[in-house]
Length: 117
Length: 115
Image (cartoon, rainbow over the protein chains, first blue to last red):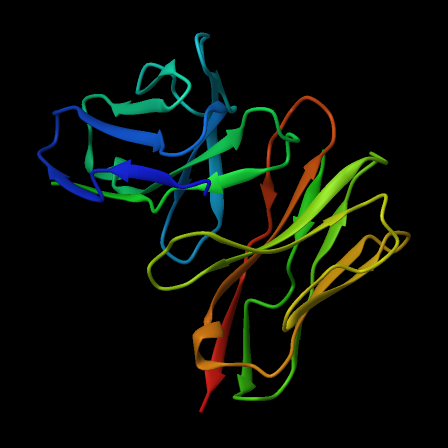
Protein backbone atom coordinates (compact mmCIF):
# COMPACT_ATOMS: atom_id res chain seq x y z
CA UNK A 1 0.00 0.00 0.00
CA UNK A 2 0.83 3.75 0.00
CA UNK A 3 2.15 3.91 -3.56
CA UNK A 4 2.91 7.21 -5.23
CA UNK A 5 3.44 7.47 -8.97
CA UNK A 6 4.88 10.22 -11.12
CA UNK A 7 4.46 10.83 -14.79
CA UNK A 8 6.44 11.19 -16.89
CA UNK A 9 9.51 9.46 -15.48
CA UNK A 10 11.69 11.54 -17.75
CA UNK A 11 11.13 14.36 -20.20
CA UNK A 12 13.25 16.31 -22.63
CA UNK A 13 11.95 19.63 -23.84
CA UNK A 14 13.07 22.70 -25.71
CA UNK A 15 13.88 25.92 -23.93
CA UNK A 16 10.83 28.15 -23.63
CA UNK A 17 8.26 25.38 -23.50
CA UNK A 18 6.22 24.32 -20.48
CA UNK A 19 6.31 20.89 -18.90
CA UNK A 20 3.71 19.31 -16.62
CA UNK A 21 4.60 16.61 -14.11
CA UNK A 22 1.88 14.59 -12.43
CA UNK A 23 2.02 13.07 -8.97
CA UNK A 24 -0.64 10.54 -8.01
CA UNK A 25 -1.37 8.64 -4.84
CA UNK A 26 -2.59 5.30 -6.16
CA UNK A 27 -4.14 3.59 -3.17
CA UNK A 28 -4.73 6.31 -0.63
CA UNK A 29 -5.95 9.87 -0.31
CA UNK A 30 -3.25 12.46 0.10
CA UNK A 31 -4.18 15.51 2.09
CA UNK A 32 -0.84 17.10 1.46
CA UNK A 33 1.67 16.68 -1.33
CA UNK A 34 5.20 17.98 -1.44
CA UNK A 35 7.43 18.82 -4.37
CA UNK A 36 11.20 18.52 -4.15
CA UNK A 37 14.05 19.25 -6.48
CA UNK A 38 17.29 17.32 -6.41
CA UNK A 39 20.51 18.19 -8.22
CA UNK A 40 23.08 15.45 -8.91
CA UNK A 41 24.79 14.18 -5.78
CA UNK A 42 22.88 16.63 -3.63
CA UNK A 43 20.08 16.42 -1.13
CA UNK A 44 16.39 17.02 -1.69
CA UNK A 45 15.31 20.63 -1.62
CA UNK A 46 11.67 21.30 -0.76
CA UNK A 47 10.07 23.54 -3.34
CA UNK A 48 6.48 23.75 -2.18
CA UNK A 49 3.73 22.16 -0.15
CA UNK A 50 0.31 21.71 -1.67
CA UNK A 51 -2.95 20.96 0.05
CA UNK A 52 -5.99 19.74 -1.80
CA UNK A 53 -8.24 22.59 -2.84
CA UNK A 54 -5.99 25.41 -1.71
CA UNK A 55 -3.03 27.35 -3.01
CA UNK A 56 0.41 25.87 -2.65
CA UNK A 57 2.88 27.24 -0.14
CA UNK A 58 6.25 27.91 -1.74
CA UNK A 59 9.60 27.86 -0.05
CA UNK A 60 11.69 30.97 0.00
CA UNK A 61 13.49 31.51 -3.27
CA UNK A 62 11.14 29.36 -5.34
CA UNK A 63 9.36 31.30 -8.06
CA UNK A 64 5.66 30.55 -7.85
CA UNK A 65 5.04 31.87 -11.35
CA UNK A 66 7.75 29.60 -12.67
CA UNK A 67 6.68 26.46 -10.89
CA UNK A 68 2.90 26.22 -10.93
CA UNK A 69 1.42 23.69 -8.56
CA UNK A 70 -2.15 22.46 -8.63
CA UNK A 71 -3.67 20.00 -6.17
CA UNK A 72 -7.13 19.52 -7.61
CA UNK A 73 -8.02 16.27 -5.89
CA UNK A 74 -6.94 14.10 -2.99
CA UNK A 75 -5.03 11.83 -5.36
CA UNK A 76 -3.44 14.21 -7.86
CA UNK A 77 -1.03 17.11 -7.75
CA UNK A 78 0.68 18.63 -10.76
CA UNK A 79 3.84 20.69 -11.12
CA UNK A 80 4.14 22.77 -14.27
CA UNK A 81 7.51 24.23 -15.13
CA UNK A 82 6.64 27.24 -17.25
CA UNK A 83 8.93 28.63 -19.94
CA UNK A 84 11.57 26.09 -19.03
CA UNK A 85 15.24 26.95 -19.37
CA UNK A 86 18.34 24.75 -19.17
CA UNK A 87 18.89 25.74 -15.54
CA UNK A 88 15.53 24.12 -14.71
CA UNK A 89 16.99 20.75 -15.68
CA UNK A 90 16.87 18.63 -12.57
CA UNK A 91 15.27 15.65 -10.85
CA UNK A 92 11.85 16.46 -9.42
CA UNK A 93 10.34 14.28 -6.70
CA UNK A 94 6.93 14.42 -5.12
CA UNK A 95 5.78 12.93 -1.85
CA UNK A 96 2.36 12.51 -0.34
CA UNK A 97 1.14 12.68 3.20
CA UNK A 98 -1.50 10.15 4.04
CA UNK A 99 -4.83 11.59 5.08
CA UNK A 100 -5.88 10.39 8.48
CA UNK A 101 -2.41 9.42 9.60
CA UNK A 102 0.16 11.40 11.49
CA UNK A 103 1.70 14.27 9.64
CA UNK A 104 5.10 12.65 9.50
CA UNK A 105 4.02 9.81 7.23
CA UNK A 106 5.18 10.65 3.70
CA UNK A 107 5.57 8.40 0.71
CA UNK A 108 7.74 9.33 -2.23
CA UNK A 109 7.19 9.02 -5.94
CA UNK A 110 9.93 7.62 -8.20
CA UNK A 111 10.88 11.06 -9.51
CA UNK A 112 10.92 12.79 -12.88
CA UNK A 113 14.09 13.69 -14.74
CA UNK A 114 13.73 16.92 -16.68
CA UNK A 115 16.24 17.95 -19.31
CA UNK A 116 15.77 21.31 -20.99
CA UNK A 117 17.72 21.82 -24.18
CA UNK B 1 15.65 26.93 12.26
CA UNK B 2 15.99 23.20 12.31
CA UNK B 3 19.04 21.74 10.61
CA UNK B 4 20.26 18.23 9.90
CA UNK B 5 23.96 17.49 9.49
CA UNK B 6 25.59 14.43 8.01
CA UNK B 7 29.34 14.78 8.37
CA UNK B 8 30.30 11.73 6.30
CA UNK B 9 29.91 12.41 2.56
CA UNK B 10 31.06 8.87 1.73
CA UNK B 11 31.48 5.61 3.60
CA UNK B 12 32.60 2.16 2.60
CA UNK B 13 31.96 -1.22 4.20
CA UNK B 14 32.86 -4.80 3.43
CA UNK B 15 30.02 -7.16 2.68
CA UNK B 16 28.72 -8.84 5.86
CA UNK B 17 30.36 -6.22 8.05
CA UNK B 18 28.71 -3.49 10.14
CA UNK B 19 28.74 0.21 9.37
CA UNK B 20 27.43 3.25 11.24
CA UNK B 21 26.29 6.42 9.54
CA UNK B 22 26.24 9.62 11.60
CA UNK B 23 23.60 12.31 11.83
CA UNK B 24 23.15 15.26 14.13
CA UNK B 25 20.32 17.75 14.18
CA UNK B 26 19.44 20.99 15.79
CA UNK B 27 15.99 21.89 17.04
CA UNK B 28 14.27 23.64 19.90
CA UNK B 29 11.17 21.48 19.54
CA UNK B 30 10.37 18.69 21.97
CA UNK B 31 8.00 16.80 19.68
CA UNK B 32 9.59 15.60 16.47
CA UNK B 33 10.41 12.59 14.34
CA UNK B 34 13.62 11.39 12.75
CA UNK B 35 14.09 9.24 9.69
CA UNK B 36 16.68 7.51 7.60
CA UNK B 37 15.90 7.29 3.91
CA UNK B 38 17.76 5.24 1.33
CA UNK B 39 18.12 6.42 -2.25
CA UNK B 40 19.56 3.70 -4.52
CA UNK B 41 20.73 4.40 -8.08
CA UNK B 42 17.10 4.26 -9.22
CA UNK B 43 16.64 7.41 -7.11
CA UNK B 44 13.45 6.11 -5.51
CA UNK B 45 13.39 7.32 -1.91
CA UNK B 46 12.84 4.41 0.47
CA UNK B 47 12.08 4.80 4.15
CA UNK B 48 14.55 2.69 6.12
CA UNK B 49 13.65 3.49 9.70
CA UNK B 50 11.92 6.13 11.81
CA UNK B 51 12.17 7.25 15.40
CA UNK B 52 9.73 9.23 17.49
CA UNK B 53 11.49 11.67 19.80
CA UNK B 54 9.27 10.80 22.73
CA UNK B 55 10.32 7.16 22.59
CA UNK B 56 13.43 6.28 24.54
CA UNK B 57 13.80 2.88 22.91
CA UNK B 58 15.91 2.86 19.78
CA UNK B 59 14.08 1.80 16.64
CA UNK B 60 15.07 -1.41 14.87
CA UNK B 61 14.11 -2.80 11.48
CA UNK B 62 15.78 -6.12 10.73
CA UNK B 63 19.45 -5.33 9.99
CA UNK B 64 18.94 -1.60 10.52
CA UNK B 65 18.97 0.05 13.92
CA UNK B 66 19.46 3.52 15.26
CA UNK B 67 21.28 5.03 18.20
CA UNK B 68 19.09 7.93 19.25
CA UNK B 69 20.72 10.27 21.73
CA UNK B 70 18.16 13.00 22.36
CA UNK B 71 20.25 15.16 24.67
CA UNK B 72 23.14 15.10 22.23
CA UNK B 73 20.78 15.52 19.26
CA UNK B 74 22.38 12.58 17.56
CA UNK B 75 20.69 9.95 15.40
CA UNK B 76 23.07 7.41 13.89
CA UNK B 77 22.15 4.47 11.68
CA UNK B 78 23.78 1.07 12.09
CA UNK B 79 23.62 -1.41 9.25
CA UNK B 80 24.54 -4.94 10.28
CA UNK B 81 25.55 -7.77 7.96
CA UNK B 82 25.89 -5.31 5.07
CA UNK B 83 24.70 -6.53 1.70
CA UNK B 84 25.53 -5.36 -1.80
CA UNK B 85 21.99 -4.06 -2.12
CA UNK B 86 22.61 -1.67 0.75
CA UNK B 87 24.83 0.44 -1.50
CA UNK B 88 23.01 3.75 -1.86
CA UNK B 89 22.82 7.34 -0.73
CA UNK B 90 21.44 7.57 2.79
CA UNK B 91 19.66 10.69 4.00
CA UNK B 92 18.88 11.55 7.57
CA UNK B 93 15.71 13.62 7.91
CA UNK B 94 13.75 15.48 10.56
CA UNK B 95 10.17 16.61 10.86
CA UNK B 96 8.60 18.40 13.78
CA UNK B 97 5.30 17.40 15.27
CA UNK B 98 3.71 20.77 14.57
CA UNK B 99 1.82 22.05 11.59
CA UNK B 100 4.65 22.56 9.12
CA UNK B 101 4.82 18.92 7.94
CA UNK B 102 8.14 19.68 6.29
CA UNK B 103 10.85 17.08 6.05
CA UNK B 104 14.31 18.57 6.49
CA UNK B 105 17.04 16.46 4.93
CA UNK B 106 20.72 16.18 5.63
CA UNK B 107 23.24 16.32 2.81
CA UNK B 108 23.48 12.56 2.54
CA UNK B 109 26.09 9.84 2.92
CA UNK B 110 27.03 7.72 -0.06
CA UNK B 111 27.57 4.15 1.11
CA UNK B 112 29.62 1.72 -0.95
CA UNK B 113 29.57 -1.99 -0.14
CA UNK B 114 32.67 -3.93 -1.15
CA UNK B 115 32.26 -7.61 -2.07
